[in-house]
Image (cartoon, rainbow, N blue to C red):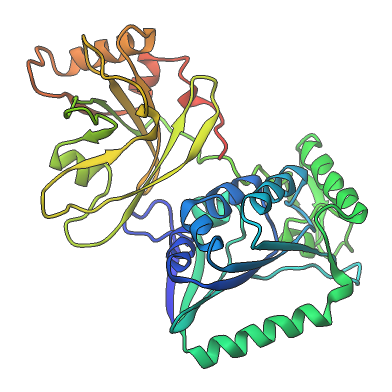
Length: 379
């Protein structure tokens, strides 16, 4: 068993989503139970290529609670994931007792020679998978142990058959709409019970204390940008006909992007579009390979020819360890001019060398105040 503490401020931190996707790579079947599900959680896990590839060869059985955060948008995203991967099955657990909640956070995966058990505090939300400080265990299982676990799982499902509902059941829909309405309710302090504080519930509970908190925040919102958040503004070279594989110097590759010369790591990129929407998660290896290529592939550059005059500029906002919101700017765009001026002030007379400068967010925001990077971004 190995304990991990997920801390987005720690450059060496492992994310729960990392380990879940790692487990998918060798899995032949699996299952999971989570108290809460969000649209962002579906996007990060169930729509990732690693999970989709696993679902094409194996099965995954999911049970979700709807006592709070889970809402209509989360289940709509889940239904789309099921349609794309028919071997993914999902049920909603509604406890029989009014003062009981469905609160587990676990997943297990069977492999050809054993299995993996993931248990911890993180839910199947963007926050639980990567933004929050969480703790989780990874336990390697023998074939006998995973078979025992699978039997326990089936026994649990058989025991609570009456509590498991399809995602489109009318009772489920009613509870999801309640959660969505609670999320829309104006924020402000309110008196809640300790059960609600523990579960972030939105239902009435017996008042056992007088803790006051605000309404639950959107679990899929990206951590806020501060004045001192680091932003890389980088000219991107042509690199032959494949400029979407953006090249960087070694210093930037290791010190800004968090790549390693010794440890296998991932970097995560989210393309922020001009309308403020956020693209899918782009997972890239962040390790210096033997060829000493310091590059990340950027999906936003797909199908776009390299400009005949000028250089594209990438703006990379680091929001957590090895996690970046980015946008690409092409010559002729107003924002490209803003960033060129910013680079000119920092590194005049660029010549043939690519300019790559790390600024603080307030400096970039002053030069480009209407950028969608400064909005409340959601995965």
